[in-house]
Image (cartoon, rainbow, N blue to C red; front, side):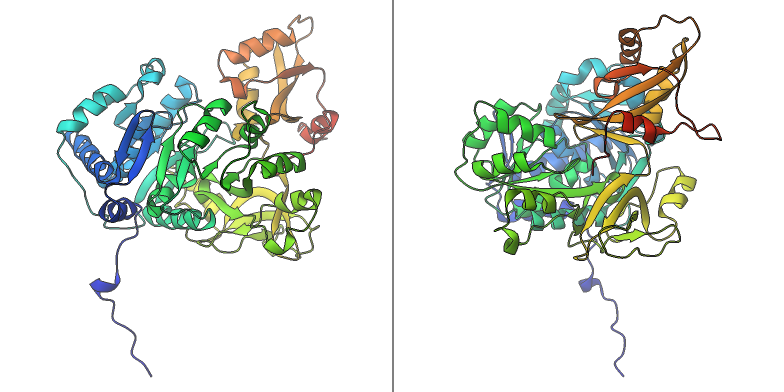
Length: 517
């Protein structure tokens, strides 16, 4: 009988994505790591910048475990923060730049962030936020030059590296706690599946605030590739950068891909361009258009609670002879776990696996290394979603005989518009603030460009002359544009015998079939 091996220090290194930057700076010190407009930063310079950011945060009294918020478009400052914040032992809170000031203030208060770094392009929004220390990007760059370098070793790979807020499926966003280990392994998985390497030039079309850019903020660095920043999504600019920077990969919502395919500058690329997309399956027409241009599209599925893409729809090469329609049907599936994860399950109401027959519906559940620690300061919600040992997504789907997962519906009434989640309850609460609105229901309507858009059904007080345009304008004063209903339909709402509004009837009236995530 063999004795159990003794755990020795030489066998253990705490997993953290900060090690990717140290490695690339060691072996590729003069390679360009970051392109931000006219600014080009080598790996040697980036490591020093990140360490100086850690020192700057320490000078602002940031201690290990403290939260640091960043409000910025895709930029070198936000990339710095993905490493420098962790090097200070702190927790990154990357803020969604599309939210309103009250929404952002709630996140800052809930997270307990004591420092806000923000881009000067967002100074009007940032000035509405109350935080102890606030630095704009110009001041940040000036102070970074003289800051002392600092790097605090990670003592526990399960400690928090980031706090990412959901879109608030019940009206208030939850803070999802990411750990160093999960960030490291998710980055490795994304680098593997996207075939990133030292020749990679990754264009930042996907916002870095979305699940830390699906962990590509760390994955590209792990590969020793180049991050090319794009502060604002513009199809013409994307085509320009594809040519001038030799872009080899990017991730984007389907609506961005539609714009690229139809843009006057669209043309065949010189080398294969790998693109990850999520939020809706790519259509056969879109796949054909982009395929002819040299784009290789992969459908991904995940949630904030799973570090972004938990599943990947890997397309078997033996299926390449299929027609485009058949390929599209296959690529519309969510697939199954990435290499860092555990195979996803589809569970019935008793928690047992449904048959892998492609027709029996159940709830998709996720388990493994790239599942978050839970919800920050919300033990009850953590127990409900994570307490069984499997994260219950709330998404309904089927499992095919080949074990690929495909979504069929959502148990939560979330609207996904242009890749952004919209909580129907949140929009309803805003509309019901209007004095003339008795009650309302917000559901998704299919949209050619955005995938889905919110549409409101409302019943009003007797004698009201409230118009559709007036109610939309009322909501727009409170909500960001993408959350504001695009239409309002007045009339009585269908209800069950217990008084619950039957949203499925309203969706059917719009002719909307829920779209996969």
